Image (cartoon, rainbow, N blue to C red; front, side):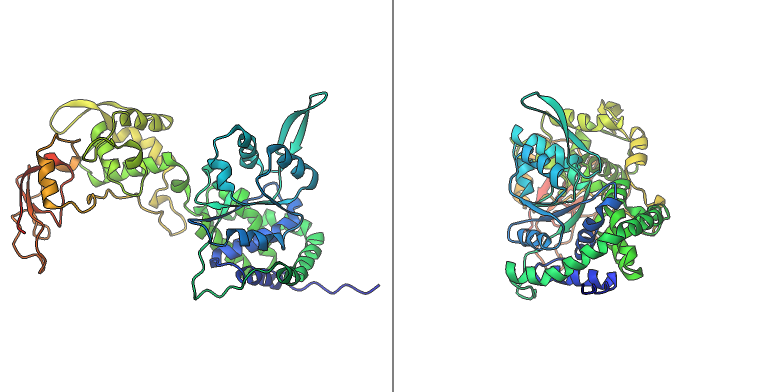
Length: 477
């Protein structure tokens, strides 16, 4: 019998797997590190109690998601490239074969409102942990039978997936190929021949590496508690997605371990505010109070008006009145706001406006516990990296022309925004605070407007928030 060739250094095998992937798809450096380690971890799956999903996503079509699944199919053990599997096929096949699931167009599964996909979504939501089983009653006796749904899964789709999936996933952002990107056309037979020696080496490595990976897992499990830099990952991202990959990378040496940590921080660090709309809402409310430090409360109408001005958040599309000519909350918006804040222990109370009127609203003090628990504060960061600051209110609603503002001034007043309060400062900032000059850096002025605080402002520099701020509008064109 011919002696088997000795295994190459594991780091070199990983290098070649990364190069093989980048030969066919346009993928970032952190993404290719994550995908390479994910492929390797499928060969030692017995060492782990959880496996992170590989979430392959793109903003539009033709970014290489399906090609990437074809590439992974040549590299992973027992690949199962499923096309719209039924719920029954899904859990039966996984229970019988423990495959590596490669599921394309998964966004269609979650966007389809059908009872046919409810069970499939439930299996995907929970199938990343070992021991997860689905009970079913099978004919003819209808005795309950349990099916295992734990296996490695790569899910490809357009746009973002539900937070229940993203929370368990390693995000892989795909990019559409440009003329300068050097990737070759994927041809199955040629690619299979190139992948075959890599797969053989991974199989041989996996046959003897499970125990070694288990030991390494015990060494790395505390890395996220030690501070720099993995403390930016939440518990689920670290324990269920990245911890297995960092353990595998550690066996390949210091360089691969450093690359794995950098990829984890880049792809999954500080992700809470992106996954949960409730946390997005808290961050935006905090930004509103930060913009007006003299305010300790907002009426519900004021707070909604501020939230509607934030371009990056969904509130404008959800809570604005589509029948109104200007931007104002719908009649249902206060109820929707209260419903989203109720789980955080915050609700509307009686507050006084600056005019002394008592209305229903929200006090800053009532948000103290929720902000402390759910928003990452810069002073609590231990890795030297500050979290992304809260979104700032965008005061420029498009590019209103002077006559549009003039018409708005005669219409019914919209919600009063905190900015319409009289300014306590008499300082001039960049020429504001007095009537603007006719000269404006060589550009014609769009006009001036007089606010109720008695100050003239330039429409170009400081458009009004709400019509009731305006006393008079003058054109200078």
